[in-house]
Image (cartoon, rainbow, N blue to C red; front, side, top):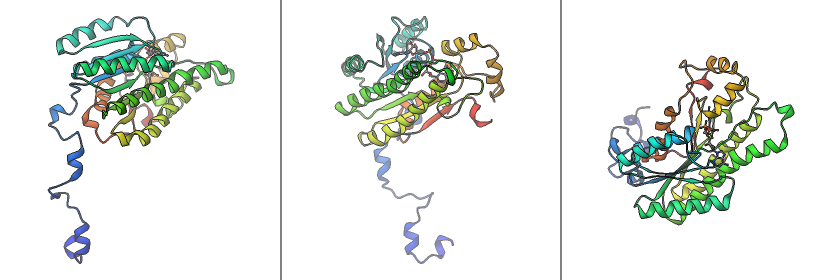
Length: 300
Ligand SMILES: NC(=O)c1ccc[n+]([C@@H]2O[C@H](COP(=O)([O-])OP(=O)(O)OC[C@H]3O[C@@H](n4cnc5c(N)ncnc54)[C@H](O)[C@@H]3O)[C@@H](O)[C@H]2O)c1
């Protein structure tokens, strides 16, 4: 039935896609109502990143400073890897700061004090702690039938509980300071599928836990205007995967068989997706997973 053929009552309920009412309340509420060149800006924000001492985390830190944000890097390593120098140079050029502090994501007391320091510094820079990326993680490959319980527990402790400690501390700081922010948890495609050729049951279980943590926290912290999402990489060439491939070079063939773009991922492939999830461009995105795997899980 066409709208013109209705009795008038139905007409009132039809919202035309070409003539919206002048006052759409949601348009006044979203932070995304800015020109396109500001949608992905992280200007006047501090972004905390765990696992930013090397690998994916340090590359994501670069993505943040390149988009105008200050970075507070945390890692269990005593000092960050050589890429830190490039990060510092870029930060200087962009007029922002990049700081490094040693912290263990499984030590809640220390982590909460690190967040308090970062938040206070952010406010003094007029760049409040408005975003976080929980990127720290560990991997281990042992057949399930032999997996020691202590190792399985450690995997869950770092990858799942560490992500929880990070998100909880950052969200509490945002609530206390009335900041509407965004939290990104680096999960993995392995939180949704089992990887052919890899004996990583503990890792995969830990990442599935990160997916569910995201949905459950989103349901609770949306009321404060805080968003939380997972970013799930496929295979990336980093120190973590280099160690796996060094132990079993033939695994690369299995990985390449699922590489629809004919290559594995590079840390650079994750900068834009992470910046998107942190930025006002993703203002209506929460409780979801952004899978960036070069198509690996699209075809079996
Ligand atoms: N490399 C991949 O193919 C791949 C694929 C999917 C997901 N991921 C995820 O991406 C993230 C980064 O991985 P990566 O490949 O860069 O590995 P990586 O080993 O190079 O980096 C992980 C970082 O986390 C830090 N870390 C470990 N335990 C910590 C703790 N308790 N407290 C603080 N920091 C700690 C490490 O020191 C390291 O710097 C991880 O969460 C990983 O599970 C990686």
